[in-house]
Amino acid sequence: MKKFTLLSVAAAIVVTAFAAASFAQEDGFVSIFNGKDLTGWAGDPNLWSVEDGCIVGQTNDSDKKITVNQALYYKDDMEIGDFAISFDYKISNWGNSGLYYRGWFLETPEKFRVGGYQGDFDGSATYSGIMYGEAFRGILANLGTVSRVSPEGKIEVIQRFATEEEIRSNVKIEDWNHYEIVAKGYVFVHKINGKVTSVFVDEDKDDVRRKSGLIGWQLHVGDGGMRVQVKNIYLKKF
Image (tube, rainbow, N blue to C red):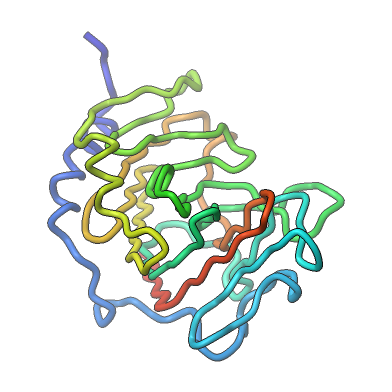
């Protein structure tokens, strides 16, 4: 029988409790997007704009073509540690995006390249809700799982609480979805449209796992381009 730490076991219990919880904007949550312009945010102005009260990220194969993933990051607070965030997103069916958190700038020639934890979402709902590590160990928790990275760097599934099909059936295609993320210590919970999608426990070495960092939106490379919209962004720092 596998032996897990108390942190891992506690994360499995979190699923049941968090599944029944909902965020209240008046309960310590503050808006970090004014709905009018990109004040407080930084990224390539050719790719990011504000339309109809939404942050919009747009790429194509001509004047907005990208060759590496790009980020729009929240520059007003670059060291966010424990937090909860909620937002609404809509993405084209060929798109791939997500929220970077506890992130950092990658040392590359291109600007606005970010690594870190990521609450993933995409246009076909294939990955929407997983925990992904951008330049940071790849997929860390798949849909419907409580997963962890051990101190030896091994990714393990602690518990499966739903099938991938059950998770995906709750995600709307080319329509608005509500996403929530909680990062507390090294336990991370993702939730879409009221249902937990993945839970991740990072028990990797301290020089690998991340205690704090920036948050930001992703534009992913891909033929044909993509469009993502985000609004109603509320953050609560613990």
